[in-house]
Length: 492
Image (cartoon, rainbow, N blue to C red; front, side, top):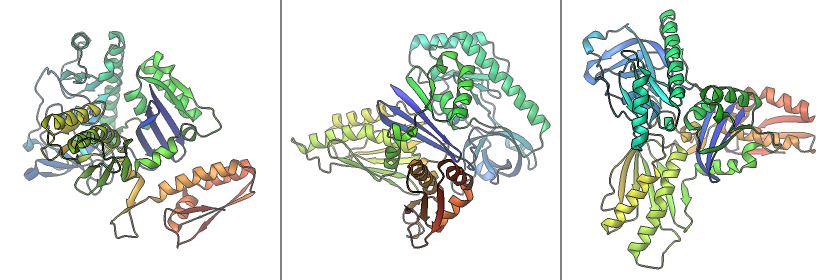
C-alpha cells in the first residue's frame, strides 16, 4: 500500500510518497521560493509579437509571462493537471483574434508553467480550477472525462452525472481520475464549491488593479492531499501539529472518510529518519543507479536533453548475448520510469537501451517502459524503440525539477559540474545540529562551514539557534573557513 510522509519545518516542506517501502515520489517546497503554477493574475499586455503569435504580459512577478495568442482545445487542462485528457466537447474552443489584443490591455491569466532559467512563466487565458474530483473551466464549454478512466460503466455513469449537473452556459467541467466510485452528490457539492470560488475570483479581479495576484494555488501538502489521497493510500503521517490540523480540515471538506487516513506523527525520532527516507533522498541525485542483477543505468542531464544509458555492468548473464541484453533492459525499464518520476525529470529524454536484434524483445521492453509510466501524473509521449535500442520521449515539466531546486552550477569547475546550493547544505546542517543538541554532551557545539553556507545559516536560522540553546542549554557557535568545499560542514 501507498504511504505519504509529510515533513514540515520553518524553512522547508517535504513530501515523500512510498509504495511497499520504496520511495516513489519526493517533493520540496521552500520558504521564500514562491509557488506560481496554478496562480491566477490580472495582468497587463506589455507587447504583442505577431511573428511568433504571442504576447508578453506583466503579471507583477518580475518576469513577464509568455502567452500564445491561439491555444489548442483542452491544452490548459492537460498542462495544469497533466493526467486529464478531454474526451468529448459541448462546443469548440474560442480563439483569441490577434487584432483585438493591444498593448496596455488587461487580461485575466493563469500560470501553467513556472519560469525556468531565463524564461518567464507560460500563461493561458483558459482558466481552470481543479478540485479533487472535478475541474471547472469558466471560459471553456468542454465537458469531458479523464482518459485514464478506462471502465465503460464508470465512464457512462460519470457522463450521466455531468449532464445532470446542468452546467451554466459557457462553463465546462472535466471529471478527474479520482472521481471513479464517488457518489453523484459529492460531485455536485464539489462543482458548487468550485463555481462559488470562481465567483469570488471574478469579484476580486474587478476590484483589484493590474498587475496583481488574484488567486493563489494551494501549498505543497494541500496539493498532495487533493491530488493523491484516495483508497490506495494506507495512511498519511504529518510531523507538524499545525499542518496536521490544516490538512485534516481540508480533507474534511473533500470527504470525511478520507480524513481517517491522516495521522499526527508523535515519535521522538524525526519522521524521515524513522522511515529511512533521508538516506534515500541522497540517492536521488546519484548519477549511477545500480540494479539488483548488478547492471546499472546512468543518468546525465544536459542543457538540451536528459540522456539515460543502460549498462550490463557486473551482470554478464549465462545465456546468449541477446538474452542478456533483453533481461537487462527488462529490469532497467521500470527502474528508469521510477527514477524519472522520482527526480521529476522533464523535457526531452533519450534512453539508450542495450542493442537487441529481435523485434519481439524490443517490443516487450517498450511495452514494459510504457506500462511503468502509466501511474505518472505528468503528461508524457514515448516514441517506439528504434532498431538500435534508442527510445525518445518527452515529459512535461510544470514546476522546477528537484535537481534545479537542490543544486546550482559548480563555481569550482567553471560550470562544468554541480554542487548543492547553500540553502540545501544549510538545511541539512541544521537537521544534524538538532540531533546533536538532543544529546547530553557536549555543552558547546561548533559548526564550521564555507562562508556562503555560514552566511545563510546566520541569516536564516538565528531564531532556531536561540531556541535550541535555550531548550537544551547548549552554546552554538558558527565559524567560517573559506578553504572548505562549499558542501563540507564540520561539527565539533
